[in-house]
Amino acid sequence: MTHRSAGVRPTHLSADYVVVGSGAGGAIAAAELARAGARVALIEAGAWRQPQDLPHSILGTFGATLDQWGVSITRGRALWPIVQGRAVGGGTVVNSAIIVRTPADLFERWSSELGIDGLADAVWAAQDEIEAELEVGPTQPDQLGRHNALALAGAAAAGYPSHPTVRATPGCAGAGTCLQGCRRGHKRSADLVYVPQVLDAGGWVLSNAPVRRVLVQGGKAVGVAGRFIDPITGRPGGTFRVDADKAVILAASAAHTPTLLQRSGVRHPALGEGFRAHPGTTSFGIYPDPVDMVQGASQGWASTAFRTDPGYKLETLSMPPELVAGRLMGGGKALVDRLAAYRHMACFVVGIRAESVGTVRAGWGGAPVVRYTLDRADMERARHAIWTLARTHFAAGAEAVVPGVVGLPYSLGPDQVDRILQASLDPRHWVAILSHLFGGAVMGADPQRAVCDPRGRVRGVRGLLVVDAAVIPSNLGVNPQHTIMALSRTFTRRLLEEGA
Ligand SMILES: Cc1cc2nc3c(=O)[nH]c(=O)nc-3n(C[C@H](O)[C@H](O)[C@H](O)COP(=O)(O)OP(=O)(O)OC[C@H]3O[C@@H](n4cnc5c(N)ncnc54)[C@H](O)[C@@H]3O)c2cc1C
Ligand code: SF4
Image 1 (cartoon, protein in one colour):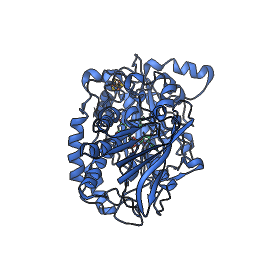
Image 2: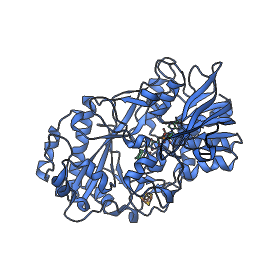
Image 3: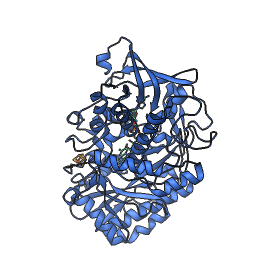
Image 4: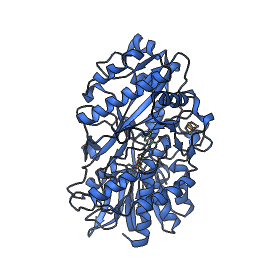
């Protein structure tokens, strides 16, 4: 059901379970419940597009698949974009489908610091199943393209371990456009794998249907309410209300789940606290021969060699010229001259395993306001990371590197690489984005410090769960989709077994 089929008349449905948000966490929960025979309504703010209907252009992608056109920003020392999916399938539509199992050290930390026990085996068992369902496998040599091959060779020459990424992209044609969605349908995103299972089991999928609030009566979540919107014009359509006999399950993302709880009148001292991210930034290498970074898997190379010390992960990223233009410095003729080197550029990226913590609050109109600034220790991680990436480029044969930090020269040669170690640590001098988000409604054993208990249940409201990145209480240091999906399946199974 969408804004068109619903029209302007109020819609009223009744289900056993209502799931809000159809991304990594929500789609798998809804499918699990539907397969168990429950009546499920999956409600998604974004539109449902088939792969062939995904836009060709970057501008179209931003409008059609990203939350707030990809231009919501952090409030803090620097204004960094927060990039999240807004579509049936959520972030899995526009991500690179890199699949990494949850590292054991996280479960140990959650147990010793937060009293969260008994998750590891269930999560890893769920990850075994998910890997089979998503046909996960390593990026093959013929899918790498020169871009990823250079990174592999550069890391080896620079002396640290790295590997082709493991992804949920069977038959990937190496078209390098994962960030715009895979128009060829090779990406096993949630909209293609899990959402249809809800319909097959007789459930409902409401798209273009942002939930405004969770309805709570007598201390129990009894449904949700909202209003359809036209995805092109943004005009509001008819209202909807979906009753939940058994439970309401929230998976609207680390930015939207906490604000939805706030808008719904849920009160808890930790609500909106504990927001974390893997801020990402880029390093371009300029090579003597064409690299053509959009030929080959979008993110076919990775290294976790620095995950725990000093705390970052490295990857490649195919960026189309429009995005590269936004990342290079300068304007006018200078920018055009710099862009002329596009075919010779390789783009390596870092995700900082930042320890800094921020907040999410419902701002004007209820939209999320994220306050987040990296502290000095995190900025030192970022600086070390782009130094490592520059060394990797030079080890792979680059002639120059574009470090992209204000105060450094536009490009550096091989004998200037250590100048990066003097780069400014002021976040305002860096260009970064946040695409891996965590927290805001975190789980934990302490009723005062954690909004949710270790099974994802919201404290103080019966029949209300959180199964997305908002419940994750620390930084992962690895790509989050697999952990989110497996946690969601684990919580959902416990809900089915033991009730809300
Ligand atoms: C460009 C990009 C590349 C990435 N690459 C990778 C990768 O390769 N591997 C990896 O592991 N991770 C990757 N990630 C991160 C990963 O996609 C996210 O961590 C994951 O999708 C988050 O899952 P989630 O369920 O918390 O939220 P999401 O997947 O963001 O889903 C939340 C959904 O809820 C909807 N929603 C929000 N508010 C409401 C509301 N009020 N009512 C109804 N619906 C609502 C949103 O529209 C959205 O569809 C990437 C992310 C991005 C943006
Ligand atoms: S790299 Fe291209 S073909 Fe492969 S999954 Fe991504 S978009 Fe599809």
